[in-house]
Every structure is written in C-alpha cells, then in structure tokens.
Amino acid sequence: MLRQVLHRGLRTSFSRLGHFIASHPVFFASAPVLISILLGASFSRYQIEESVEYLLAPKHSLAKIERNLVNSLFPVNRSKHRLYSDLQTPGRYGRVIITSFRKANMLDQHHTDLILKLHSAVTRIQVQRPGFNYTFAHICILNNDKTCIVDDIVHVLEELKSARSSNRTNFIISYPITHLKDGKPTAASLWKFDYFFCLLSFIRKPLHRSLL
Image 1: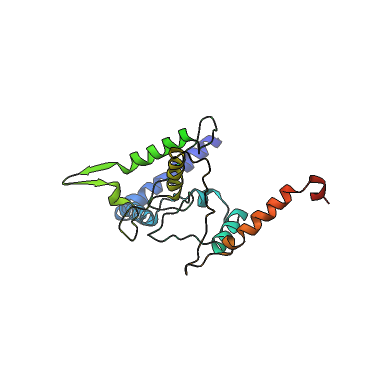
Image 2: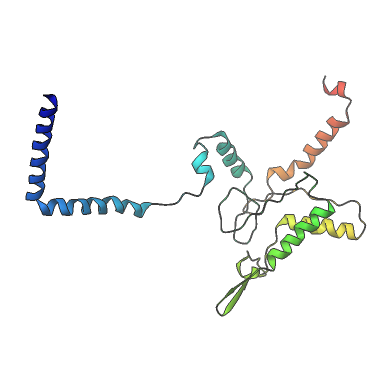
C-alpha cells in the first residue's frame, strides 16, 4: 500500500515537472549556460599561491613578528645593485643549498673547490635562442660598473682558496656589517667588538667565578 502511494506521488510530481520544463524550454536551456558563465567568471581572480609561509604559517606567528622586528632594526639592502642571501624572500633568482653527505666541514679544501666549480659551471651556462645566445651576464644582477655581482660567500671561498695556495694558515673572515639607507652602520656593527670581548672575558674566567 505504501509502495503504491509513493509510486503514484513520484510519478505525478515528475510528470508535472516534465510538463513545466517542456512549457519553458528557453529558460531551462539558457539558465544552466548563464549560471556556468557566472561561476566561471570567478576564475578570473584565481591566483596560484606559491608562498609556503603564507600557506602553512599562522598570520600572527611569533616567528613572523620576530623577523619583522629584525628587518626593521637591521634592514637589508635589497636594491637592484645588491645581491643578498635570503632563502625566504621570493624573487627572480635561483637558490642553491649545498650540504655534505657526511656532515663534514663545508669550508675545507674539497668542498670549497666543488662549490667554486659549481659556481663556475653556472656562470658558463648558455641558452641558445634563434639569432642570439643568452649567457649568465645577460640575466645576472649588474653592478654600477656593469659587471655581474657575485655572492659574498663565493668571495670568501675564493679567498680561502687563495690563502691555501699561498700557504697562509690564518685567514680572517670579517664580521658582516649592515648599513642603513644613508650609508651609516647600524648598532650591531658598533657593539660587536665589545660583545666579543665580553664573551671572551667570561670564557677565560674560572667556572666557579662565573657562577658567583
């Protein structure tokens, strides 16, 4: 009995629905197209988000707050005539992270030579296009004298290699100094020596005296 009632009700309702659709063919033919166009127009605002930090890190995380504080106190020169090592900032440049399989010292002679060899191979890359060959000099960041800017790490490794070739056992790597936009050094470069000697004085003291 219940089955017959349900069957009769569904047949009647779908029959009326079919009659209504057949009576308004233009509306039911154009409505799906218009709805699809309206919904598809939202793809015009579609953008691919490539920032891993934006996708995974909270907006008000402590790491972001501390980084903004550091950037405000020790600004980095991000002009087009300056090459800076920053793995988090997006930009039109390539990044290479070099590690050792055996967790060895990356400043020893073997690893230094490999890194310089890799740098030399990158600078010799050529891309052939119809009528022109693009080299590293065409896409690198240029100095004021129109020469490619080399990363400071490469300069340090070249100095280490030069020191080894001249049998120098001591090579001084200077402390990096951050400058403001007006060219003045920041506070970090002013108190670095006092900080170093303060730590050195604590290290030289006997342990029991340091704990008093």
